[in-house]
Amino acid sequence: MGESVNPASAAVGGAAAFVWLGMVLAISFLEAPLKFRAPGVTIPIGLGIGRLVFRALNVAEAVLAVVVIAAVATGSPGPAVAALTALPAAVLLVQVAAVRPPLNRRSDRVLSGEDPARHRSRAHLWYVALEVVKALSLLALGWVLLSA
Image (cartoon, rainbow, N blue to C red; front, side, top):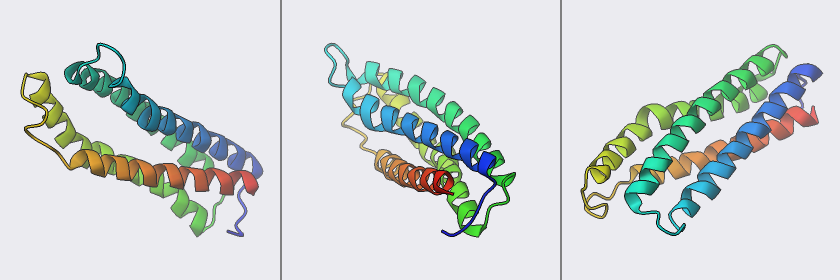
């Protein structure tokens, strides 16, 4: 990228970006699919657990996004670093504001006893695609900041 960021800001921002990335990888790509394979975990139980876990994850992500943005902003970033910083935060905002509400409505119906196969939703696919974009952007951001 060729841009320099204040070394302390880069270290804090890079560390926070990699912590955020680790949380996304652990929850979204490990815990979420595996919980449904555990003995005795039904779809309603898995959905109930998932809602709690993802709500907590999103709160932690919001805190980390603020840390990353503040660290990078105080480090006088160039436009490419600023864009890489904004991307995962924007993706998180889209997930929480636009994709989670339809997922919550669907899980509400399943938790109230409706057959999960009755209402397939593409919102889940959008959420996963956005998680991939977020993970890749956090990897790139962390790499750029810690390589500065």
